[in-house]
Length: 287
Image 1 (cartoon, one colour):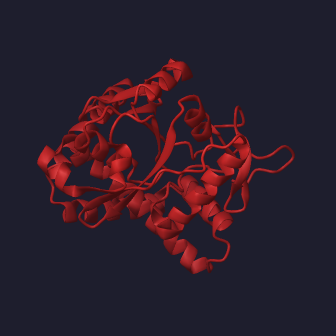
Image 2 (cartoon, one colour):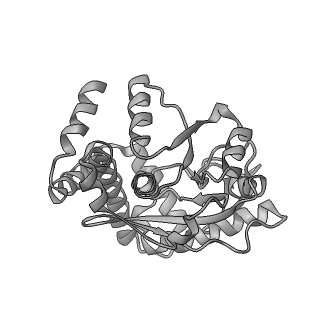
């Protein structure tokens, strides 16, 4: 079944994008209908983060989240197996690109929007610099090998395993290899701090500030938006007030700025994740 799934993704790489996105919308609606547990997670996240929305509007957003999730997953077919010229044409990299020139140590803050793989692919294909990121092993070894090879398709990129430790990552940062970091998820209570996310205490790893300080690096945000013709990958100006001497305050700043980007495209954030699974001591679970 794994080999069949990978073959199917290779097959989808050759579909016209409008047809693929339409198929993705259908798959998303099926997932919304049948995956009750994950539907409950998305509903809970949106209820906590957008209490001002009317119930009907919130439920429409829940459905759209599933559609965007499915469309982005199927887009990996052409991102990972499509003609390189087609990939380049569908990925529009813009913004403060001068911030990625040279060898200045840089941490790229790449939040969990559905286009996270598109953002990584745009960087590694279109910019002549070695990028690194942190990778979590997949339980299925065939899938693991496929994902690893696909994310290293372009450029001289490197994926660090979590077992590699901080030292190697920091050394690469200081050599001028930008780190594509996605720290905006719940990784459990260990090493996390509770800071507000849409007004709700959320366990958040302070790794953005930590790596920036250890690597003597600046932070450059990168936001990827799904568009009808592919993805718009926007490099934002470096933060000149980050990090400070307070990693908890820095992590709260990260979440607050992330909220502004989510508000502009709430259907494209990774709401299928249990963002509030870890609760402060004494607080009940929300899921």
